[in-house]
Length: 377
Image (cartoon, rainbow, N blue to C red; front, side):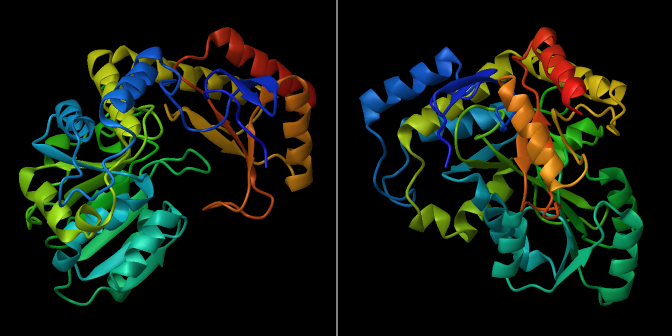
C-alpha cells in the first residue's frame, strides 16, 4: 500500500517522493486550500472532533448545520441534508422516493453505490446497455408493466472513463411514462459541470429548479441527483439538496439520520468553506473546465480518441494492462503521477489510464504531462 504524505494538489508526495499529480478527484484543488484547512482546524478546536451521537438527537453541530445552509445557498434551493459518506447518497435518495416507483432501470456500468442502494430496497431491477437510450427504451417496453412507474438510475459522469450520461435522450424516452423519474449520481459533476458548477443537469441546460422535488409529476419526468463534498469541494461527506418536501422525506425516510453518527466536525467545517469558496468564486469552475478542454485537446493531438467535453478527467485504454502499467511507471519515473484504474465499474481486468486535471494546474504543467506521454507512448 502506497502512502500519500501531503495534501492532494498539483504537487503531491507519495511514499516520500514528490510528483506532478494528475490523479484523484480533488478537481478544484480545494483539499489543500488554506481557508479550507484553517476552517477544519478552528472548528476542531471549538467543537471537538465530532458530536459522538446521531443527528436525530443532539448530533447536529454548527459546522454540520452550516454545510446544509451553504449547500442550499449554492444550489439556490430550499434545503439540504448532509451526512458522513457520499457512498450513502443513493441509498438516502431512494429512501425518500422508493415508495413512489415500481421498477428501477440501471445503467450496466453504474457506480457500486447505485447497485447497493437499488438492491437494498428490493424493487425489480433491470440493467440496460451503457449510455444507450435506445437500449433503455427497449428495456422499458419489454419489462415495465402497464401503469407502473419507472426510475432510471445512472451516473451523471462515469468515474472510470469521464463519459457523460445522455441525459436529454433518456428524458425523451421517459416522456411517454407518467410519473417517471431520472436520478443521477452526480458526485463527479457537482462543482465541476455547468457555469455555476451545479452538475450534469445544468451542463445540459435543464431547469435545475425542478431537481429533487416531490411528488413525482405526470407532466414530465422528475429529475433527481445526489452529490458529494469529498471531491471538487475539498471537504468530506455526501449531500442531497432540493425542496423542503424532498429533504424532509430524505431525513425522515432514512435510518442514517437516527442511526448514524453525524459528520465529523473538521470535515463539516472544511465542506462548508469549500461550498462558500465556490459560491463566491464561480470563476474557479471556469478555470477547471478550461483546463479540462486543454488537456483533452492535447490528448487528441497525440492521436488518442478523446472527446471535447468539460469533464476534468479521462480514462483511456492503451493496449493491455501490462502496457498501461508500463506507461504509468514510465511517467512516474519522470515524476508525473496518473492512475492505472482496474477492477472498477465499467472496466475490464486490463483497466484504463485515468488522467485528471485540476483548476490549479497550469498550462505548463499540462504540457509537461503531454510531452512525457508523447515520449512514452
